[in-house]
Image (cartoon, rainbow, N blue to C red; front, top):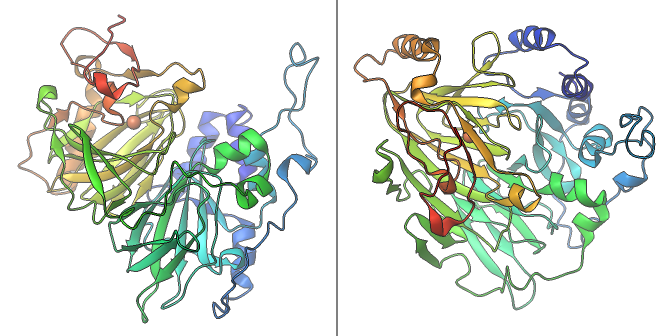
Length: 457
Ligand SMILES: [Fe+2]
C-alpha cells in the first residue's frame, strides 16, 4: 500500500470500497507495509556497527522545503490567491527520504517487526508512518549485541520504550551527563535537543527500542531537517543534567506522576478511577517538560470493551499485556465501514486522525496498554477538542454481538460482557454516561478540573 495510494485515499480519489478491498487482502491486523525503499536498503546488506563515530552526522538530505514537488496538489481555485501549491512537508519527506519505513494503522508485533539497515543511525530500524498522522510518529530501533547507536540530538519531543533486551542511554555532554538503564517495558524521556546515545548492554542479543516523537509536527511547521537535526540550543528548563534526572518521581495529581523514567510499565502502579464506575485504572506521566506528548498507561478488565469514539488528536497505542482487537473506520464502526486490528502484547495501533474507533478485550486477563496522545496541544492550535462518543444506549447492537462472537472464538466463556466506561485517552475527558443521551463534549484540557464536562445534546 503505497504513499500514493494513501494520498489518493485522503484526497478522495480512492473509494472506500476500493480501500476496503485493498486492506482485506492484507495480512492479519493490517501490518504496515514495507516500501520499495526499505526493501532496497535491506538488499544492501547489514551495517558493520564497528565504527564509533564521535562527530554528529550532519543531515545529508536537502531541506524538504527546497525539494520541488513534481506532482503538486493545488488548493481550490477560489482560495490562496487562486490555487496555491499545498505543502505537506512530512508527506514530502516520506516520499523522498531513504530512511527505511512502513505505513499503515498498526503493526502486530513491534518486537518482531522486520527492521532494516539504517546507516545514519548505525543500527537497524524502521520508521512507522501512521496513516493520517501529521504530528506524531513511531520509530523502532534495533541495536546489535554489545553495540551503540550513533549519538544524536533532535529538536522534537521524544519518549522511548524498551521493547526487547536491555541497555542504557547516556544523555548530555561534559559535566551534565545522565545515564538511564532500561529493559523491557521501560519508558524514558529523551529530552528535547539533548545529545543522547543508546547502548545495548547484552553482548549476545539485539536490543529494541520504540521511540514516539513529534518529528512530523516539527517538519510540518518548518520544513527543515537541518533545524530538527542540527539546532544548537539548550532547553535548560527541560534538562538540567542533574544526577537524579532519571530517578526522581513525584505524584503531582491523583493519577499523575512527574518523572522521566518508568522502570516497567507492565508493573507500574495504576490509580483507580472509581467515580467513573467502569473499573478503569490509569496513570499519566508528565515527562521532560514536554508540551505536546502526553503518555499514560491504562487497563481494562476481562470481558470489557470501550465505547466507540473519535477525537481530534492523534494517539499511538502499544499493548503491554493481554489481547483483543480494535475497530477503526472513517465513517463508522459497522463491519462494512471499519477495519479490524487485532492486538496482543507488543502490538502498536494508531487509529487515523478523527476516525471512529473502539477497543475490545478478548483475552482472559486485564488488557494493559501504553498510549501516547497529544494532551491539550490541538487546543493550542485552535482546534476545538470535541471528543465524540457513541454512548452505550446508542450503540449498534451488532457491535456487542460481534464482541461476544470474538470472545467465544478466543475461548473466553465466563466473562460478563460490559462496557469499560472510559475511553481514557485523556483525563480531561472524564464525564458521566447517564442513560438517554448522546453527547459530544468540548475538551477541557485543564488537569485540575478532571470531571468537568459539558453536555451538548
Ligand atoms: Fe481514542
